[in-house]
Length: 396
Image (cartoon, rainbow, N blue to C red):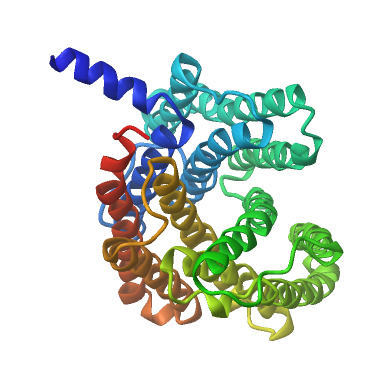
């Protein structure tokens, strides 16, 4: 009987990308910060060849984020294409490749960096090929740009390791990876946020609906790509490019504020499952504003505030917003956030984002604010595993 139960659970876990990658990405998000904060503060050490800040960057940008993206795309692409999703042994092999990369890169000081680096570099190209194969088979050209973003993120990871090898630190790869991630968020959010908002408003709060995708949205996406490219280029020649890049970042932030206003965020406060999507997206323009501030305000101390508005805010909050909604939807649960989701998942991750930005703005308070941000981040992602793990193991 136990063998049959174990087999049933295994089949369920391998039936869809979100069932494996969402809880695993949440655990990695929590463990990475749980390890890095005391390591950064000098209380422990990790047996990896990467320096503490670089390991932290690598595991969030190339471990946690790709796992979330994999869980989302492997679940969404079948809906986009009408084709069966990746499941069973292929899904298990893909997940194993990701997991082995996480383990080996974290003990690379013991094994040497060559094999761990090769293993961790393999995941994104394999994922991109899988997604491209499905899109090509369905002639779904509209979503080729998603694959292009995966390719950029993969190139950023290659550059990351080259920079570590040559300089012992990261110079540009982190900006490239973060830019690809923010661009992916602006593309995907432009579909799901107004769509989910509109569905909820039609059912419960009749009135104005979010504006459909238009040339304005396309213009915002193009402007976002140009501004992020300028931000990356400014890392090579700050004397000549920092000011024009900052002006572009400021204009782009304003364009995102206008874009989000067209999605009726003020009408969603009665349902946290919808509100959290808008709150997450707000950190996209906030990141643009803060990233432009060091040059425009002549204050280099503000540099990391924009980065953490994007990473802890836009990425962290949007990840939990999407994972909770997708899990509820694909396991037959009501599309409503219970109090456990609102107060034990959403509230901590928002607190984490605010505390992390505050730590960047007030470095003298780092020893207080950084642990708060870290503990709140861990609480939010562990909360997802605790409250949504049982749903993932159910039929649905």
